[in-house]
Length: 104
Image (cartoon, rainbow, N blue to C red):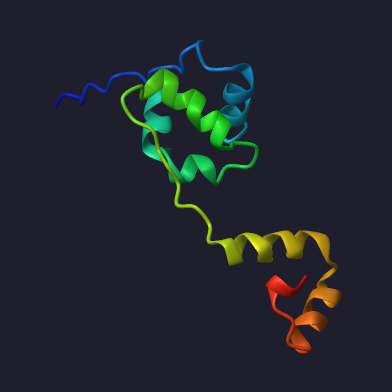
């Protein structure tokens, strides 16, 4: 019986920025194949890995494509901003009295 020959993983190229390489390494992603498996949604969910790092990966590994995430609706953006600025109890109190995001 012969063993299947598996190619060794391809290391990440040195053209990626140090910041991008560190973000990937923190999450155990050390090969091109792992990046390809995680591209793009799983990469963007990694802590410390944002759109800038994704663009860096695309420039080096996927120069023919660019991922464009769906934009948040205006009301979703407002709600996220309010959630960051107000303590939870203040936000809930405003909702209880019927305030809408456009009134802030």
